[in-house]
Image 1: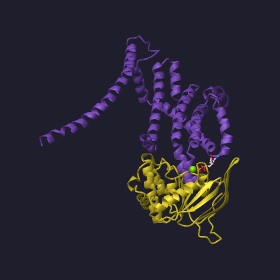
Image 2 (image 1 turned 90 degrees about the vertical axis):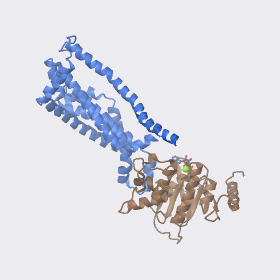
Image 3 (image 1 turned 30 degrees about the horizontal axis):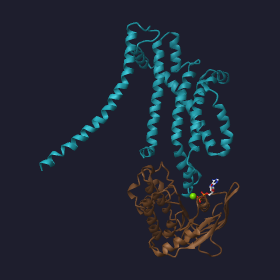
Image 4 (image 1 turned 120 degrees about the vertical axis):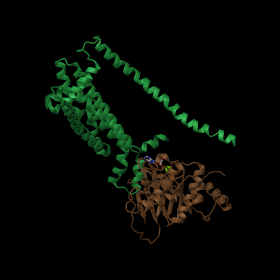
Length: 278
Length: 242
Ligand SMILES: Nc1ncnc2c1ncn2[C@@H]1O[C@H](COP(=O)(O)OP(=O)(O)O)[C@@H](O)[C@H]1O
Ligand SMILES: [Mg+2]
């Protein structure tokens, strides 16, 4: 009897300790990984305050944040941000839509493959950011230039991943669906689309990354609005804090869009969790 | 070549009649005029060496091969179970079984079909979470729910371990007794063929080279003397020394 009462505490204590033990290395590691960035920012702040860094070369992080707060309050930042987002969204919609359409045509139809894929493969060799001079001649230096650049940047990664995603679908699954009486449209919906979805998500993430990059370049050419314009204008007046702020905003946009896509992806591709577990 | 679904003019009650089925891949002729007949409720085993064209023939019969020639008359519906389960990884078990079906009673039918293969409680699982035997049972349920007159099975248990294979053979025997479907069972396992089939066919050099009735009862086991005798005869015909 006494033995029986001695034994229970042990298993109770064990699980209570175990998660703490297993979690602690993760936490300490996370903290350790934060050390260097925090030190760098602190060093930057110190260097700027002590005058080691000239304010017109690199202002203190606190100054950049204060500037960000000021521009947020008077609405300037939001106006330019919305303009940049509109450009990115429009370009992404055009380039991404075209990529999905052509990628699907080339991936699904043999004739589409023969007619669409070769020119796309050739065009991919051109660095699209190098097309700026040509694009200026073609569409001018206005809004069309920015949108075209974004669309071009977004097109290629999404096209190639759509194409590959459709091509890599297991033919045997399509065959099994046919034996279950699924017609071409139902096979597209139940087999091809979900089968290509992981590749589509990858393509979308790459496309959005390319879209931001194209936007940064595009907005440096004669923009009248947008984050890029804000930065170029600030450069003329040596407002380095605004330039750095613009960089931060670009970085945040990239980060946020990536996190958003990953979240949607994780929800949509729940079936792959089981796949990884086995 | 799509199988016809018209009635058989000769008055046979065969669920499947195939004549002169030919299929070439480039220069090599894999099927050189296959002739095949399956009566309703009859289980026919198709034996043959690796690469003899068993899968090719089954795909033709399932209407999956547009380039084969010949005549196929099918009375009723078919369903197919492949060697691999071929479940859609992005659909839960129940949705895989229900694939292509519609109607208000589908949920009930899926539950019944899954219960028949002993997987009622796994209906919410993803295919990747199942063992090989479980996944193959879901594939069987997906075929059964269509209430086929003819079940086409391409080495359905070939990828399973020996013990699971025995259980699956028992399951198939039970389901066949309950539902009375006809079946064409492609296998390279002589024991499996003798255990499950009413008749054996041997595919060789692109034609049905051998046909053998299996006059064993429904409760046959490999321990029956008659089973052993038939087995020896079959192996002899297949050129395997015993
Ligand atoms: N799609 C194909 N293209 C070319 N050859 C094929 C194709 N499918 C099957 N074959 C050939 O046909 C022959 C029979 O194959 P198969 O029907 O799979 O044999 P079994 O199922 O009896 O092992 C093999 O020689 C194989 O190489
Ligand atoms: Mg085969």
